[in-house]
Length: 205
Image (cartoon, rainbow, N blue to C red; front, side, top):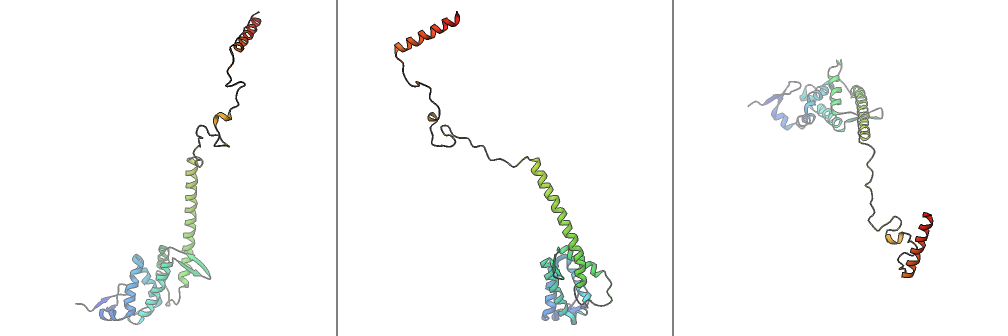
């Protein structure tokens, strides 16, 4: 059984027993799994700080990986007291730019990286703003095509109830005709018929 393995990034041989007993090396292996598909570019960036040979610089690499993990988890960074938001993909893009640059000396801080991330963060902000405007216009268009806001359902009053007095009786809201409900005598009926007949005869003449 092999007692050593090669580092997937620097290709240096690592003693397995030493790895198991070295807390920094163990933490490095564990932290590298936190970056998923971005692990390779994260490790490449960390090596720009002069983390080789790994056996002697394990603690430095561990500290750098911890800083990178905090950056990825927060998806934000601060530069000159201004906080910027940036996606994990944006961070990985900035790291890739850094790895492809030729630095004559090892890096000592993240200032170069932050300057690259500022440009990417600004681009992402503008992209989100444009997308937000598009989404707003879509919502407005959908609202206009669907007409005005739905009106409340028409309230239909039940029979015998009237606006202003829900306890009112319909019969009491109607003005009664004169003599309504009064029975006429036979003589009165004959008198009215005679008057009506006389009026009709006068009109016909």
